[in-house]
Length: 141
Image (cartoon, rainbow, N blue to C red; front, side, top):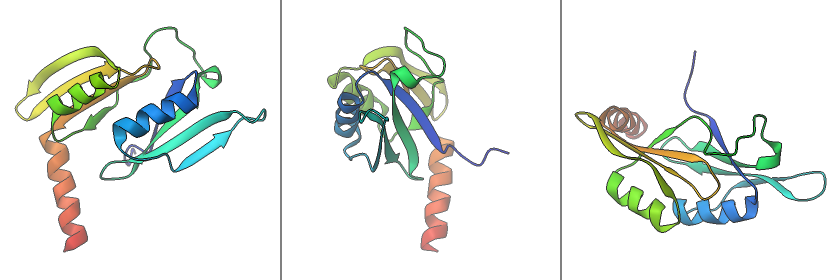
């Protein structure tokens, strides 16, 4: 049984550049890095959001199934303000993959392609917010 998103991995030709881009977007620094045998930065990882999910950036040449276009499953990250987050991603050089779309009452999605060819999904999701609030209450309770 799935217990929750643990790590999502994105790819970049230049992990240093991707690290800086994601640090600017997320407002935090990576907490972990790994080097390839030749000493190059091969992987970095950030802890993100309410549940400290892991966002990893891996050297593209190490990708198992390389792709020339935008790639990967679309993981939608819950956000408080979809329009502001969508705008911020564009300010940082991301390109629209899918415009904001209402998927139902309380559910809006959008996605962009980051400068490294990865698809980032963002979403307002009332269910996510309800679960996050319940978990917050349990921690405070």
